[in-house]
Every structure is written in C-alpha cells, then in structure tokens.
Amino acid sequence: MTAKKGSSIVYWLGKNLYLNITNKCPNNCYFCLRNFKNGVGGFNLKLQREPAFKEVLKELQKVINKKNWNEIVFCGFGEPLARLDCVVEITRWVRKYYGKNVTMRVDTNGQGFLLNKDRDVIWELKKAGVDKISVSLNAHDAETYNQVCRPAFENAFENVLKFVKKAKEVLDVEVTVVRIPEVNIQRLEEIAKEMGVKFRVREYIQPFW
Ligand code: SF4
Image (cartoon, rainbow, N blue to C red; front, side):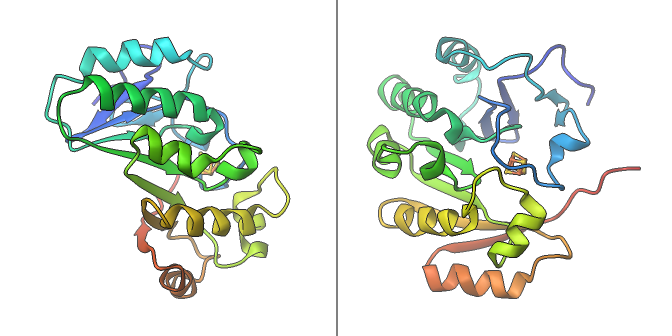
C-alpha cells in the first residue's frame, strides 16, 4: 500500500483503529520503528505538529462508524501518556457517544508516572473508560533498559515496573518485548509472571539497509 497523503492522526490495521496523538517520547529506543520508517500500513505517522484534542476528535469522528472496530488503541510514533489529557478526553468521548462496545487500549512505554507527576494516572485512565494497557518493557533489568531504550528519565526501568504493578490492580495489563539480542526474554517472561500480567513477544522489524 502506498503512503496516504500527509500525516495520519488516525489509522487502522484490520479491525483495530489506532490513534497517533503525539510524536513525543522520553525514550529513544534504538529499535524504534520511527528511526527507519515513516509509518505503518501505508499511513504516514510522522506528525507535522502535535494535534489539538479537537483535531484528534475530528479525525476519529470521520472513521469511527466505518467498521465495527474490535479495539481503539492509542499507539503511534510517540508515547500517548505524554498527552494524558488527550487520552482521557478521547476515551470519555468514545464511551459517551459511540454506541458500540469497543475495547479501549493504551500502548505505552510505562512511564506514565514520570510524565504526569502529581496525577493519579491509572485511576484517571480507568475512570475515563480505558480497559487495557500494553506496556512495552523491552529489558529484563535497568542496565539493559538504559542501553536499549536510552530513557531521558533516571530510574525509568523501576518506574515502569511500578506502573505495571499499579495498573494491574484495576486494568487488563500485558507486558511486551521486542525480540532483540540484548534482552533475556525468558527472564523477562518470569518478571511478567511474578507481577501477574500477560506477556507477549513482538518480532523486531529490521531496518532494510
Ligand atoms: S518507547 Fe516506543 S515510541 Fe518511544 S522510542 Fe521506544 S519504541 Fe519509540
């Protein structure tokens, strides 16, 4: 599929609808797709600027009734929880005005607490109507995390674990890992098990050079 004109705030793959609400992220993972691609599925996810809530809503309204979506997912070329207000407002809108039963998911690097100090992030998400959180952990210890995810925050790894444990109390949570050589996948699976959350391995899409 060829890239659609301009950048996309809303895109879809199969029966899931995705919201690309930001290109900001406090990590700089060496394997991040945005380092070597402009988007996915023919959609360009490199935003010209950060869209206002109203723009996100407008784009969502254009397509929300096109299919019976299985999930509406906050996931794009940035960290959705860097825009917690937008995630909360859009979720509230979907719950209030979209008549169908749809799963609302946030794909995150799990740094929601670091990005939103003084806010009750998990409770705000739950209250708005988020069902699921998928946390991209990508390391079995802090040293590996710093090496592969190159976070701007100190103690990011410990914070991500804290986020997962807290989120698990009220939401459906999974931890994911990209299959890269630095990560001990078995160890990470054990960590997920100890925390009582689901675990999923994602294949690394190699850059083509
Ligand atoms: S956390 Fe996600 S969006 Fe951020 S740099 Fe890593 S892979 Fe990219």
